[in-house]
Length: 378
Image (tube, rainbow, N blue to C red; front, side, top):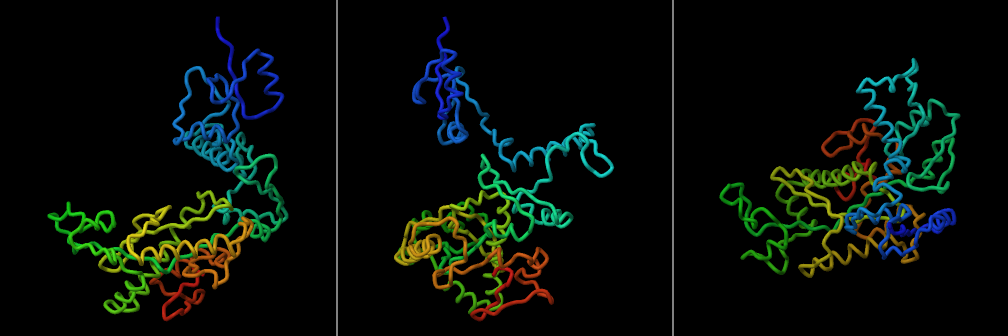
């Protein structure tokens, strides 16, 4: 005789429980052996996450697919339906047939939808075609009407959206190898030539435990100005700032820009013999381990200045706060990019403002502390 189904749920609703009890099923806890689990979407995410390593046995079923969000998240639903349409068009399927105006005959069941901020320019173009239209703004990952509001003016989007703000910490450092670089194949296995990591260099014979093979960014700048000239040095640092801003803008459309979050990224840049900077990687958790006294001071100040911006005045955080902090609060940070101030410049202006590019009548340069500052970043 087959045993009774053992059930568990984290959604205490009578319509669920009454149906389970009607069938004579046995209620258990999530820590016991269960056969049927009616889960919330948060729980299903945890069950199938890589971190938990949980695997369902043959006698267990749940009420969600692992990636149900491909349909149940509003942005992914639209994305997948658009992809489905394009695939059918490529296949020449009659389902993808369109009328004279270009509308799908059989697949026109999703209202015109744009994902912001990724599709902002397309949205503006469509908005201006029908300026009297009303649009529904819906958060991608919420339900039950939370966060929904209507707009009929473009200015209302600016009040709702959060403009990205990017700052660079001026007190960074550069690391050097203890052995002079050579491209010779005979040195391919010599990590002291190719890798600047402290974990490797500290084992070298010439490693200096006082400065740790590091210079401050300011010392690097002074050295380059004296040996290569001010103009090319300023161009180098402007290009590093350009890399930071453009890399952040590249991931902006796919980044889950939760209002409760901020990031302190660590950028690894390598500079070649022509003083061209190359982006190697971006660290989500830059090392806070101190290898020298100067290291400890720098990193302490970094965290101090970061907290002053993220939690102004040391007060209880308010995620609704999104204003640019006053200069006196920035400490050793400098603002590289403020989307609110840069809106309207457009890609053409931005490209014209790229380091090394001359600016025409639509662009301008500012002089700050004897160097060129690109207005697109401000």
